[in-house]
Image (cartoon, rainbow, N blue to C red):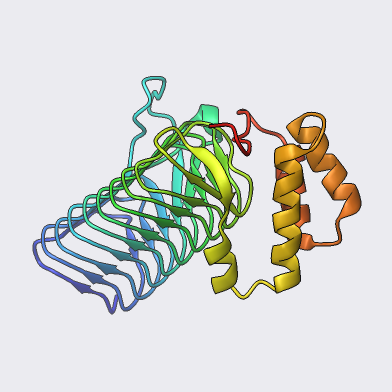
Amino acid sequence: MSAAIHPSAVIEDGAQIGSGCTIGPFCYIGPEVRMGEGCTIHSHVVIKGDTSIGAGVTIFSFAVVGEIPQDLKFAGEKTRLEIGARTRIREHVTINTGTMGGGGLTRVGEDCLLMAGCHVAHDAIVGNNVIIVNNAAIAGHCIIEDDVLIGGLSGVHQFVRIGQGAIIGAVTMVTNDVIPFGLVQAPRGDLDGLNLVGLKRRGVARADITALRAAFQMLAQGEGTFQDRARRLGEETDSEYVRTIVTFVTGASDRSFLTPGQG
C-alpha cells in the first residue's frame, strides 16, 4: 500500500486502505472498513463496522464513524454504512450503521460537510452536497435529499424527510416533512417560505423562481388538503422545480408535512 499510516494507528487485518491515504496517530480502523483513494484521517479517529468510505474523504479528530446504532432493538445484526466521495467529517461527529428494521444501511452522500459535533443516526439517508452545521442531529430513518442545509443545534425527528434544496434555520426542531426548496425556522419548525438565497446561488432561472413563489402561495392558501393542492399544482405547472415539490408531497411518507402558516 502507498498509504502513509502513523505507527501508533491500529489497522485491523482485513481493512482495505486505498492508495494515497493518510492515517494519523492513534486512529483505529476496523477489519471491515473499506477506504477509497486519497482519504485523510486525522488523529484519534475511530472507524468501525461494515463501512465503505469514498475517495478523497477527510475525517477530523475524535470522530466515530460506523459504530453500532443507538437503538435498543439492535441485536448485533449485520448492517452497513456508506460515505460518499469528498465528504468532510469534522471533529466529534458520530455516524452509526443501520438496523435490519430500517433497511440495514446508513448513507451519507458525496461532497457533504458535517461540522463539529453532528450526529447521523441509524438508517438515515443523506444526499449529496448536504451541509449539517455544528451540533445538529439527524435521527434514525430520516431522508435528507440533495443540497439541504441544516442549521446548528437543530434536530430532525426520526422518519422525517427533508426535500431537495431546503434550508433549516439554527436551533430548530423539525418534526414533519419539509417540502423541497422550503425555508424552515423557529424553535418548533415553521415553514416560512422558500430558500430563495439557495436557489439564486445555484443559478435557478427567474421564471422558475417565480413559478415556485406562485406554487408556495397556492400551497398556503388554496382549497382542499395540502396533498390536494399539490396535485392541482402538478396539473397546472410546466416548471420542473414545482414538479419536484409535487412529487415529494404526493410520495410515500411516515410523517405529516410542515405547511405554510402552520406556526
